[in-house]
Length: 405
Image 1 (cartoon, rainbow, N blue to C red):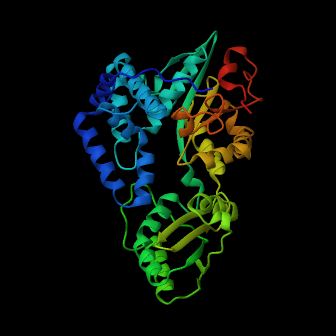
Image 2 (cartoon, one colour):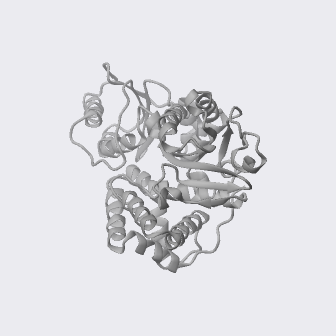
Image 3 (cartoon, rainbow, N blue to C red):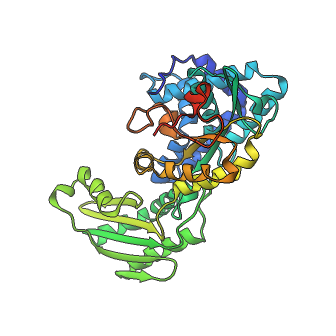
């Protein structure tokens, strides 16, 4: 069950912003707002990706509504960051400022730091004493847990679901925003209902902070869609893309705004990228897939294998606390319901390199923002214990390592 956030103090949020730096913070908020204005769909995704920053900025002002639960959780973590800074040594505070500087630069977000703070708070609520040697001593691990006579190291890490996708959501949103004007104009001239299926064997790549480009794969797909519309063609294909334009056939119950997207999702599956453009009585649906299924859990396993040798000392039981970024509620639930994360985590734990690891944990924004089950994991995270570890059955460590599924 998620812990309920405490009431927040706006002065604590001002202290957090002062820790970041008032001018850098203001510049970052302005930058995010500028990027969020680049297109409807991409802009919404960028606002969601920087929800922590926007929540803190809103709560520092004068809200005319009660703060949401997600905003309160963001405020609580910002407050914890400011409180932690006051307890750190000069070197520790300098490292915290370095992490904050990285969080407000380029494609960074507050998620890595807040994931660490939330993990620390979660373990304290389970009866552990928590230290921050990653900040204080520049150790490779972030947290040191103590309970009874046992200690455990925790390395907090973030892996993007985009690393497991050939067709990046960031690139898809940019493509849809880019083609929107042409689709509107085409529907006005050729009213009707259409379905454009795109198969992109090599996918479509793009980082969230990239600026739109006039060349490259995204621009090439855009040009091919425009050419298909211009020539009133029905099919265009080569090794990089297959485009097929057909009439959109809908059942009566699926023809309204409420039933359309669920119907499309049922037809094309959870991994399809969908968009709907309407103009008058015209409707244009695009459905895209990559050349293989998404491998989000596989990307997590690869990340586990990469960090295990370098993020822990090997002298104590180690916990790898993973944050799965860039997922939505549906995908996060699907990863859990299909036991994909468990399967890949347990495969990793069977490796020789995982012998010092006593457990792997997984969380997402659903847990970070305090959502309830079934969107979020019941205990605030998924946990997978390594039964081969010598301390796997130690009662003192059980709250942090006992498998949750």
